[in-house]
Image 1 (cartoon, rainbow, N blue to C red):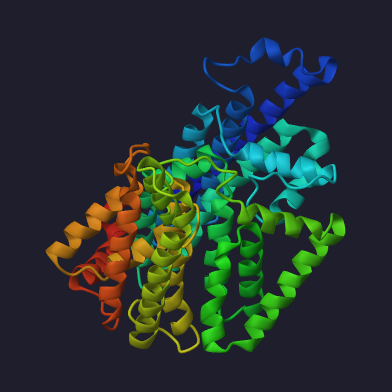
Image 2: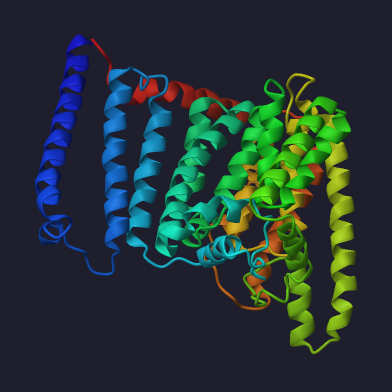
Length: 470
């Protein structure tokens, strides 16, 4: 054991020495002549962005160093090895994926919103969020558009790594063992259309879903932080406000007070920095949401399906609102029925009385929150990942397994395309997910035998994988 520890410490020392030499080398190049000498020894590869290459190369180098530090500190050990193996493979995977990508979408909407706030102009029509995110980006406007994009891309990568950790922890709270949760999270996030699309469009979904998961993990021990997390989430993207419902049902007045006060504080600060009129702009943009967004068949909301059908068959467009409202009313009533049953029967979570209602509500309401939205792009499916993974622990028959695997493939693995009506298969898949939730909500939570065996196997697995110590 001492010999192994010595080797790791020597590797860490070598890593630090290399860092010192790199610092000296860069100093020799940069100090006398600025960045000009650097251009002699640094090349931009074909179809690459040199800034991205440098950023993700540095990330990978620091990831390597952090592994050595965790080994020396014995934080990585036989008990935690499988989690860290999954986490670091995941971190290196997306550092390489993102290093190879040079074109990004949607980020322009964030940049324009931040610039408009800076110039005291109304929010752009395509900016469909409360003013908080644009306000956070506003101080970077004088540094230029490219700098704002770099900040958002870096934030997305680190938020993705945080999502890995939080999702693993949430699965653990729902009864998955630490190692089984790590394996599932690694597989689910490594091959996933919604993850790639969120990164490719530099969307804020990772920030929002992380805050939702934190609001769950902080509860009930840290009520203020739980409320603050969800409050920030609702000011980045309005739809998570639906997750306040279980706290109302529970009559947790302390949490609700914290949520109200933190929400008012966010509104007050953003209004003080800019103007309360930007909240009016947000409401106006939401009311005109379809005017500012092109009708795309890959956008698989109820609104999109109805509007596309009416347009293709030359039906009166003014009547679409009634069909959309009717379909969403049915969906809402069904969702609330599933919610009531899951709370009553403790269908997905059994724990302390303090958190049973909240934990059984969240996975149902997250699905409902996403499905009721007037726009559902592929990257929004990142919100569905946690409920889908938790739903897996209720699968107990071969037929259920086949249905579940088919749904998972449809939701997360099929590439994006636009082809009416086939590209609305994801909406059909979400409806079937609701049916599964409804079926399982009728019964009390009970782990099937395969789940118990998997939990046990993955907890013992490191003992079989790692070399024995003498």
